[in-house]
Length: 495
Image (cartoon, rainbow, N blue to C red; front, side):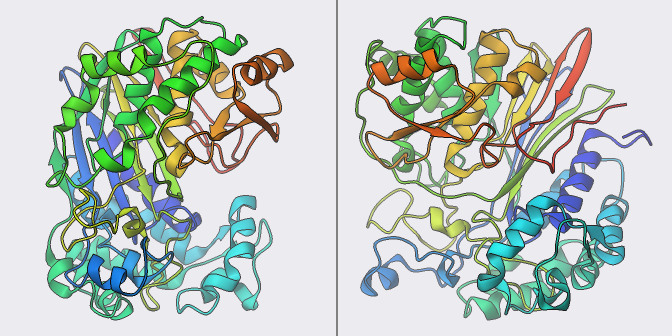
């Protein structure tokens, strides 16, 4: 960006580098969503680059085999990766060629990079799963997991990235990676499936909340839950002090009032049982707010949970253009299956499908699954005011709602909002879930939540997996970003 690149250029370049140095979170074998806002536009534009199920996908076949859910880390969970199509679609609105945008990533893959603490720990845990895969040798120099600081180079991935830099999507979907995807999946994903462009520009959905307009990706993303939670919270007129247990109680209950129906109303747009915009209608959110007990937690119906392995980044340039981009392999390194020896690890986003006959999210060829990826971008009139997102699978709306409430409702700067202790409802498929609190919560807040009927347990002081939330906040006088202290592989940079 200091060299004159715009926010889109920067987002693609950063995403590509992250795919090299953090393959346990993202990469070419995963999906991508992006929200792009240009100064002066009333609303942003949204890119949905999430892939579809292959022609050989069959819910009936899996049911006949005795499955009631998509088998974990299986070839049946592999959908067409949308990342490269997403890069191509975004790059058309940037100022640089794909070759320039991918040059830094190619350099790190070729010349090597020091393994972060996070990557070293992940590769230690993942070795039994992925160690025998053709693309694993570069990640395990000498056959052993790297130590933090050890140099890792990924020449096969460098070759794949170089081919994409030269020839775009054709090099990926029609070349060695595409052929390997069809082979690995037993032709569940065919050459014709890979030939179909996965990226499309769609209208955002949004609502007015806390003095701004919050925007997100419509279903098949769960992003609507963040904005719905925050608007319901606002309608409840909670106290503005995060030390007050009532503040957190109402935020938790606002979230729980929408999460229970996630699996039934978040699906491919072609099978969505309601209009996407209706998920954020004021009358709908008011009705949820009226059913919340201000004095005690209450059970809600169960939902279906899903894991996550994701990277999120936010960019904003000197012209006011802002990008909220999220890209993911889903279950950490995805299925744990590589596309041959190309250096590409294949995601398992298909685990978001349902196997119940007639369900809006039922696995079927050409459909997109429910997606946990939930980026947001907030505007004030025609200017971007907040770019906000996180990794975290199911929990993304929880962490985003907490940060946004601290920043907008409790009037904290982005740095202080990052430092606030977080809670997590990890078992969202339980109608009465356990509430985990970082140990830094004040005792009176913890006891106040327990008194309201929440089943409270204590987590560590800074839970590594509860972020990193990334945010850029802008007003007429200042633009600020703040890195999440829970994760070492994140940073806020500006010139």
